[in-house]
Length: 192
Image 1 (cartoon, rainbow, N blue to C red):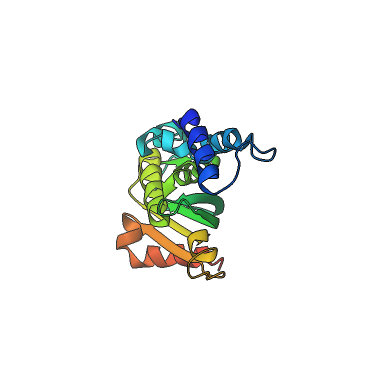
Image 2: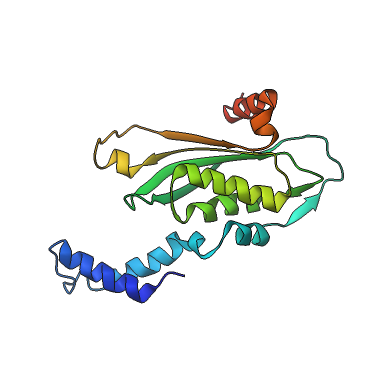
């Protein structure tokens, strides 16, 4: 849980360290606003991957195992880089899995991506966390996650590479071991 009182205290100190007056009209309520915002933006830190899988593990029986791929594309998320606390934005996640007799509710897949991203993260770990959670919730080892996004630690500071996009993929089970399935996943990502 986010310690909102500690956040308020530290944000007030940060404002002072930046050379501003936390008691001026525009900043008086800033520490409280930031603490409330952090509760929302870092909600995923309250749960382990196992907790999220249990919360989102509502499945529906499809009655057979025929190797059909379920894919949900372009789930919009954001996160914060653990190195600079910088925003990772314009992020889109695509998740695929091979059901084993049961499928997850589609909104659960989006909610899993959302909660996994609401932590201090690395893009690569977001993909790994989503794959772990989907695997636990859907009870399948066959999961693929593709993420692309922008990182303000690259676009707004340092190198200032405004148009750079980071892409990452996490492949588990048959998506890792079966080149034909892997190829099918990446072709579907392109919408072909």
